[in-house]
Length: 267
Image 1 (tube, one colour):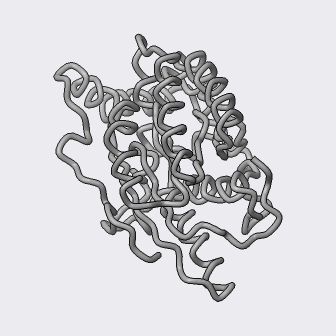
Image 2 (cartoon, rainbow, N blue to C red):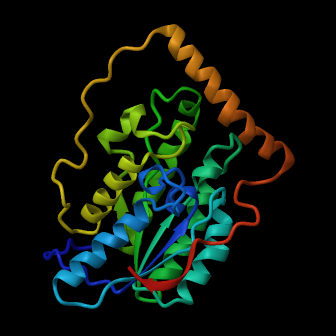
């Protein structure tokens, strides 16, 4: 798809679908109990602000993402619900929960994703996808790296075939730093969500608000092996064990949850 030549967003109705990444888990404003935001909410705010500054109507936005969702429910339940809202831009990001499972069929995930992209594009709406993140050096998560890499290769091909935009999470340098990750080591911090939103602007052919949005952090002070071991043990107790328990019982953290922003409203 050709890169836009103006910083004026042409989209009027944006709907985000996906899992916890798009729901915005771990991104509560200022550490409060306020509703989670996440990169998609931040992106919607940027798009709306630019429209207002140009004297246009504010962006209308809905977020149907729910934590814990696998790709199949995203494309069979959330995507049809999104299309009923008549969007002209849909962000579709999913598959990460599937890829965490060793038996994940990445080729099938790609087929499901492509079918959903085709369905959205057939309405005339634009599609914003995102690659999986590079988990090199992320401990146990590193085992998923080959599956993520194959999924990303599929995703770039899907985007080329159907004219979709892509947020290149794999290539973001700041995400190599564990300080950009929440305590569960799966989700992002508030700063990371803000940076990803800047990357999404770039993916859509718009200028970022800050040219240094992907600059790495200053080097972290060294940590002793003992301190690292204690941190790893706490991570296993607080985050890995509950996740494994959900898997054992066939449940999900998103069971019974509803989308936080199910209708298009002005941002």
